[in-house]
Amino acid sequence: MLTGMQIAVIGGDARQLEIIRKLTELDAKLSLIGFEQLDHAFTGAVKEKIDEVDYTNMDAFILPVAGTNLEGYVETIFSNEKVLLTEEILSKTPEHCTVYSGISNAYLNGITEKANRNLVKLFERDDVAIYNSIPTVEGTIMMAIQHTDFTIHGSNVVVLGLGRCGMSVARTFHVLGAKVKVGARKNEHLARITEMALTPFHLNDLKNKVHDTDILINTIPYPIVSAAVISKMPAHTLIIDIASKPGGTDFRYAEKRGIKALLAPSLPGIVAPKTAGQILADILAQLFQEDLALRKENSK
Ligand code: NAP
Image (cartoon, rainbow, N blue to C red; front, side, top):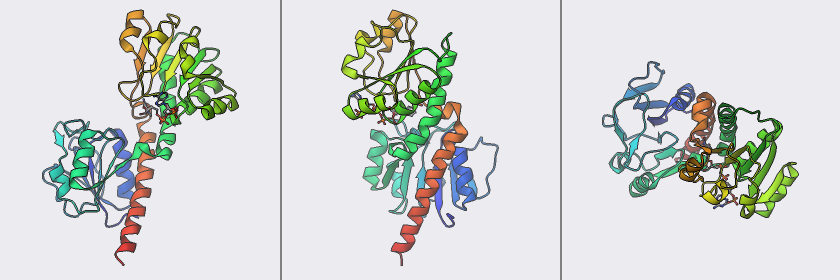
């Protein structure tokens, strides 16, 4: 249980509702900031404005997956008000107060460092990234179906990268009957791709591997699908780039060549906000319970 814990949930989308549900069930006390248009009420959670909250006993802040933007504003789909997170607000919290976000940027790093508060980037955790790869793959399949007039089964699919998403994408398209080639740069990744009964190739060789590609799925957040690579693809190739913005594709050149290339961010939040929220809710509940136990132990 999280009895006695005080947590500010600041902004976010439908994923945050699962987090609020779970934490209120565990008896945490929540301040919901940027939720005034949310119809649903949760016992133990109070809707408040960012400048009206008493932060003196706040144990944690939960931000949306994106954290803040580079000016410090937090995205709030349940509010029309602008919610700005500042160093001044963080400085009003107790020293142990921790900020939880999916990812971070220079602004969020800067204010947490200056206020000397711990920042946890949930998406850097392997467990979260692996669980999250499940709805990500389902979103990728949805996009492949929506934007092609052929089946995935029997098609030539190239996956770039064998990280947490790349492995899930490659395996799932293989199971759906696609002929999957995977590009990587590490020997151990090339070995793993072979072990998975897929066709490996080194990324240095990418432009020689795409002449018959029907669908290319990029998971590498680096400019890898260059004009030189795109120029070797057949005109009907669909590029789905799931790497974080700005992706790894030369979208300008793809458009010039008439090749459909889609940047597909936030797929879990689009195709399965409930599951994506539950993944975050479960890990946050676990982290809060550990934090609470540690603080109780230290105060003995
Ligand atoms: P990951 O586990 O870190 O995998 C990244 C892959 O990219 C690894 O195979 C890595 O290979 C490769 N890579 C990185 N930099 C490279 C470079 N300069 N040259 C060649 N290969 C490089 O990350 P992940 O969890 O799979 O996520 C992949 C991307 O998808 C991230 O940008 C993430 O933010 C994004 N993502 C998007 C969605 C969505 O909904 N669109 C959902 C989840 C994640 P090495 O091991 O050799 O470095």
